[in-house]
Image (cartoon, rainbow, N blue to C red; front, side, top):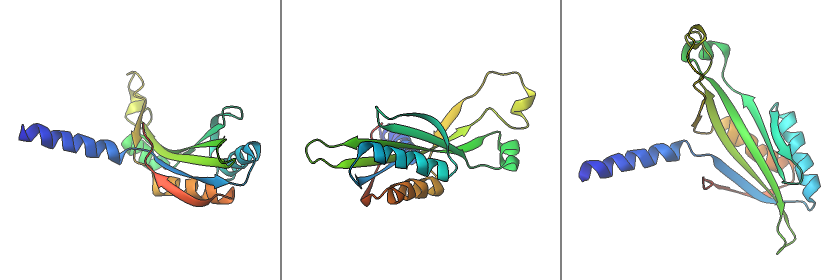
Length: 155
């Protein structure tokens, strides 16, 4: 029993270490203006836009953060991912922006993986980088969000 509780604690802590981090706050009014600002900020910070939809109010960008040497030896490329969501709160009339910072390691590259014919290994979610979290906060600040709140989103 004692061992299973310890294993559960380790698994829980490991899961928390890789959880995305969410930042949010109230933006100047205007859903479309907030959305366009989030898109512009992702572009200015050199994120590649992967997906987005104005009607749904979300935009997702990805930026590679690993270098070639690291990729060759580890077989993984690291990418920061920012997902911005904009929405109006009908109760208050405020426009909100939430930015979720996450990070993935793509294991389908590298010197060794390029030599085999195995199936693709895919991506593993890892803890958000400090630069990814700073980019999320910068996006909010540059879009006029004040009083940014940080939390771990529910997965």
